[in-house]
Each structure stands twice: as structure tokens, then as C-alpha cells.
Length: 214
Image (cartoon, rainbow, N blue to C red; front, side, top):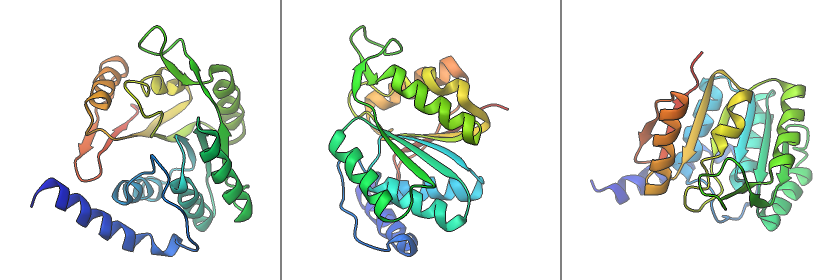
């Protein structure tokens, strides 16, 4: 079975598994996790009993994650998104579904960031992310699941760990999407070297997964 067919079959199986969360139509947005990757994230939330979630890059999948959190009856999700239209849609949908108590979306435009690999590299607005994440952690505790799914160009995702490592709980799970791309593979290699993380990659989901040392 070739990789493309295997991924398509995995996505079909995943769509069946999340049917209980499909309470109403959601559009497919650019950058959304593929269904098999979303199910892998959900499995980690449930099996790992994750309750303080941070997602970099949001979309319709953020609404599905929020529905899961509400269905479980505990946990919180903070999503950070640079695209204003995407952030506005997700925030509006969360309000409409009454999910504001479990999930929050922050629109943080991209700007030059001191942790970027290149001198003019961009990431989410530094002060805004600092303030939002600090307030979130002060309220709910250290982050025990970090999903890195944005920004989506070059090595732009690298600052995620330099910026957020200090707020990750011992034993927290770090998931990175699109690890079938060379740029993301290079970022994972640097994170592994600099932070002592060992990433397991799953071709069918294109996710890389690691656990923060205790």
C-alpha cells in the first residue's frame, strides 16, 4: 500500500471516529489538521489526561478540540492564530456554541521575533503571546499539551519551544504537524538537540510527538 492511499484510509477511519463531535457543519480551513492527525491529538488528550492545552495555529479543528474538552467535562484550550479572518471565525463559532468557558482564541499577528532563526524571522507578536500565555498558565497551571501547527512557512515554527519551554509541565506532550516537510524536520532536529526531546514521527498522520522530560 503506498503512502498516499494509507493516509487517505487513515483519514476515512478518523472521520468515523470523530462523528460524535460533528454536531454541525464546519468549513475546512487552510492549515487545518488532517483528520488522522486530529484523532491522534484527541487520543493524546484523552489517554494522557491532558487538561491545559495550547495550540499554535487554529482552525475548524480548534472547535472540534473544544467540543471534546466540553464533552469530557474538564480542561481548557488556548489557540493562537496570526490570520485575522481565521481567528475571527473560530472565536465566533466558539461563542455561538457556548464553548467560551473552555476555549479561547487569540489573534496575534506575525512580527519580527528575537527567537527566530533568521535575523528577520517572524513569529507571533512576542509581548502579546507572553501576556496571554502567562495569564493562561497563572489561571490553569502549566501546559501539558502543546500542539504546533503554525505558522506555516519555512522554519517559522522554531520559536515555539524557545518561547514556551518554561511553561511546559514535566511529562507534557509536544506535537508538531507537517513533519513530512523538510523545514519541519529541520526544526524538530534543532529542538531535539537544544531541548533534549526525542520525537517520534508517524507518516500516516505527519505528526511528530515528544514528551518533556520529568
